[in-house]
Length: 119
Ligand SMILES: [Zn+2]
Image (cartoon, rainbow, N blue to C red):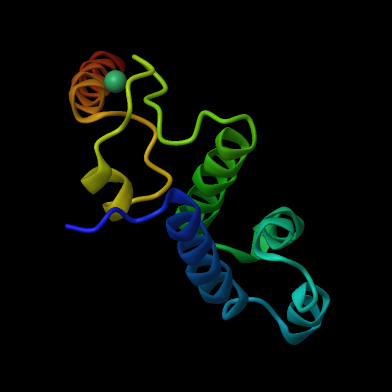
């Protein structure tokens, strides 16, 4: 399997996300976004958050976090154990924050908290 560059992944993801978000924005908003690079577009999209679904806003924030990690040279590293995140996880979701093991224990903790809060 060929190694996909994280930059390419992130750029593709960002472009796909930005175009799907743009589809939801009014013509006035879209016009203002036209000349911006994908990364800058993400910040610009922040201003139109009220027009996006909660799921899209969440995706946007994850992507922004990934870009910030890229800038500081930490992209692709697990936010919990700082080991490299498995390639297939990044390919499935370039804004992935955790390696498989940490994601599993994180999901377990989140589930426990949910159960506790629910009780
Ligand atoms: Zn980890």
